[in-house]
Every structure is written in C-alpha cells, then in structure tokens.
Length: 120
Length: 178
View 1 (cartoon, one colour):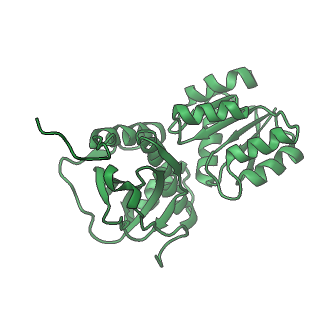
View 2 (spheres, rainbow over the protein chains, first blue to last red; view 1 turned 45 degrees about the vertical axis):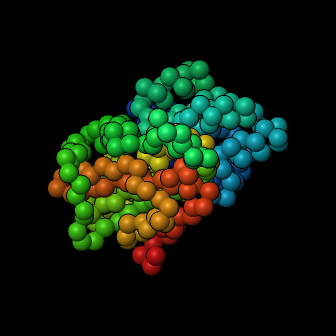
C-alpha cells in the first residue's frame, strides 16, 4: 500500500506523514511531491493507492491536480488536507471527485476516520 | 429611530478576538500539544527587537491579511517544536514552519469571512505587514511561549470600503529585503 503526500510545505508533509503513522498506518509506504504538477506526474510514476493533497500550492493547486487526474482517466482515491474546511470547499472537493477533506489543524483521530474506508 | 442612508449594509465583524483565540488554541493543541502551552496575554504586547512575520492574504468582498509575528529568537524553537525534529533546522525550515502557522490560522479565519475569495500562499518578512488605510484590525492575540512573544493579527477591509481596497502584501520569498 502506498500513499502520495502532496504539499508545497516540507514541514506540513512531515506533519501529515507523522499523523498518518500516529493514526495507525505505519505500514503504508509514503512518497512525496511539492505541488499539483509534480503530484500529477507522481501518480503516473508511483501508482499510489491514495493521494493526500494540500489545496493551495504553486504551479498547480490540489483541485487542478484532481481535475487533471480525472480528465486523464486516473481514478486514484484522493483526499484533501487543507487549512480551508468550509462547507463551500468541501462541496467543491466532493464535486471534483475527492473522497474526503481533512481540515487543518487535524488530529490522528480525524485521519483514522477519513482513511479507514480507503486503507482499511 | 433614524433611517440609515448607507447603501451598503455594514455587518458586524465575523472575526473577533475570541474567534481568533479559539483558532490559535485549536492549532496549538493539535501541533504543539507536546510542548509548553501558549499563554495568552491580557493586554496588547508590542514585540521589541528583531521579528519574523508570516502572512497570508484573503481575497474577496472584504480582502484581508492574517499574520503571525514572532520574536526572531523564538522562531527556531517554534519550528523545532512543530517539526518535532532535534537536528539543526535550516532557515527554510523556519520560514516554512511560520508560513504553515499563518496558513492554518488564515484558512480558518477565511471560513469566517463572508464572500471570501481565495487564500494566498504564505509570505515571510522581517517586519510586520503594512495594511492599507482601508484595512482595520479585526482581531488580535498576543501570547507568550517559553518566554518568547507571538502576535496573531487579522486585518480586514471595512465592508463599505472593500471595493476600493488594496493590501500591501509581504514578500513571498525569505523576505529580508521586503
């Protein structure tokens, strides 16, 4: 099982990976990308089982990456991890095909709840 | 009762000191729960000496800016606590950490602003931001952590002035030349 973590902040990527471990998913391999463009390429090259992506990033945003993935036929399970957790953002995420949106600040419990349907 | 002549309804600020304090508290509990608590000050405290400041902009009907200003001496231990890494941190790690703090607070503040547009990417500077005259301070939190002062500030354009507003954003790089 492999997860792709996409965030332009190295600090936040580390926090996401740490929280993934704390949520009990220490058996999941993690690969990283720094923006939506790199993330799109990494989905092709790494074939992850799940994408955890920030929303606001340079080069290409998370929602642009998700649109591009779906447009290219990639149906990899996709969830947002973002500081913007408003109902409007959740509706946009769901409409684009995201399975969930975890709002920052988050807890290991929030990760476990969101990831259980995907990673088991 | 006199009838208002305002053509634009003026709404009370949806972002107030208490809301900002709750947002900062939630962030602290999630990411800094393993270190000393952040102690909120009862009175405003202007930080003297060198600082680092991370800011994110909010676009929309009422453009705004959310900033965290930290004593420079406190920035490294703050980043180390966030990263939970004992090794030497680079300047980039410190700027990245402060930017993420501003991003988390900014994203949650944005959710409270009616008709908000996009949240910008964090910018780092060696001085607090200079909002335009149209902006007003909507909320502020001064706090102390391990002897270091931090100030969280939310600037928002007043509703009736929002259409004529433009912020002076901070630099988007390491910002010492800003």
